Length: 229
Image (tube, rainbow, N blue to C red):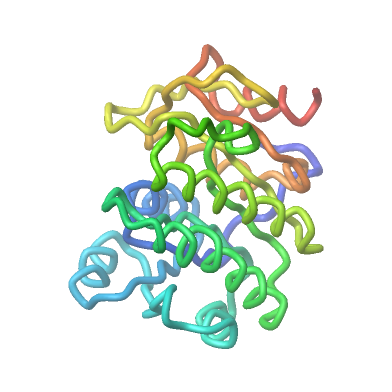
């Protein structure tokens, strides 16, 4: 993106859930364009891996920390990406403590620290009613993501919400679709990371919520089309 609405690069970006699969794909993309990346992690071994990727990790326990600790972790930061998740361990309580409460504390931390730009990674279809036949874990996840997205939209920050479909570990394709109420489909984690990097650099993406699935357009072209829709 090179138009006048593009946001300057060379910024400092904090990533909540900094050791996640998407976050580890995002770090080199941001570093390649001159951004400083601050992944937030819990353990020293996670920090060591991220240091090798050129990041500057800081320590934060999402579940045990309060908003003031988030604000301290966001010191000197220009933008925050919330890419944390409660994991596939079947723990209903962690869906709330990480996916919802972690996001809310991140928003509060941004407000305290004076960080305006915020990008949240959610999931496609979370506004739909959850069938009674679905598992309690899945229902808890959907509700947590739905409610955290609402908190983001009401935060007053310069937010963007991305709602990917099923996440794939196959190599990235640079072919995606961004839109509203898209049919659920898979998208690679590489392409999700590339889309996060793109929206961070594009001021026109502020105050937009998009589904994100595999498609026929490059990330750049899909973002341009979505902004203009």
